[in-house]
Image (cartoon, rainbow, N blue to C red; front, side, top):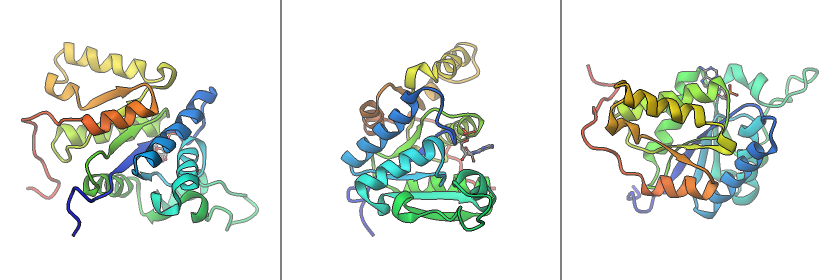
Length: 220
Ligand code: AMP
């Protein structure tokens, strides 16, 4: 088995199934793919072809080839998140030469666990990154943050804050720490980056705070 020194880092990107109204969000998705390529980092993502999801995957595959991207998508979502022609039932079959390898899973929780496992099993410098997105992105971002708080993983979670999109969330974290609902040692689980380069920097320099739970789903 390869040692952690030789393992390639894996980044899981959570992001919108939409592209957003400002072109800055799609630009950020492309910029992130570019720095992942420059730093030899693999991508695991939600497996869609639409919105920011499609953009980050398509861009990284165009730079680093199909082996650099793994999409994991619940079967039921393929009709919604993989471009398809309603007249042609085969049209939502994803083209791996454009979007990388795809794995179909049975449900959302299986997807989240499978994506997290790839990051945890990857080399140092990997972690979780949120680009802009809606309810789905926020759900995934908060779940993976709480898994760090519980000690299920010790990987960084970076919010790529494009045009202040996540200011409200970052402000809420500060408020929750001040109000005693998030501990100071858990405050740093989530970090902010304002550029794609800063995302990778934050992933590389993250130090997990000591003393959190060390929970595993297999424990009784
Ligand atoms: P959105 O940010 O709403 O555009 O969704 C982005 C991604 O989050 C999509 O791939 C959704 O499938 C995914 N997602 C993950 N968990 C959920 C959830 N509980 N509800 C809706 N979407 C979710």
